[in-house]
Amino acid sequence: QLELVESGGGLVQSGGSLRLSCAASGFTLANYAIGWFRQAPGKEREGVSCISRSAGSIYYVDSVKGRFTISRDNAKNTVSLQMNSLKPEDTAIYYCAAASGYTVQDMCVLRSSDYWGQGTQVTVSS
Image (tube, rainbow, N blue to C red; front, side, top):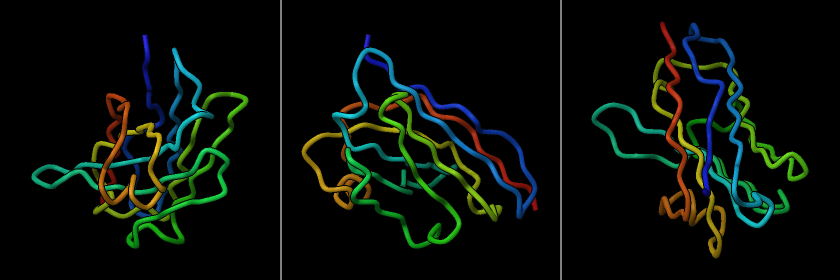
């Protein structure tokens, strides 16, 4: 069974940090670009950050540049999103996704993916 599982979400105060992790089972993450997406209540799903298979290309949406860092460990079949200086507007359900055949920008902007995780809630209090 092919599966992506996110972890690391939670409740944090404004200015705090969280680290999200995405683990794959049933397939090899190294064969895919990986992205983090988020969806807040009443809003469309948004591509937050996407990383290419080799980590040579990375995309960040403007609102998180300088605060979030995506990384991957292909040997461990995991991808992480370090989120610093969190703001209340970062509150959302965060999903990881895997895609092949897209640039990281297209993956994030077009929200194109082959596999999606179930999501993890991130809540930032003011």
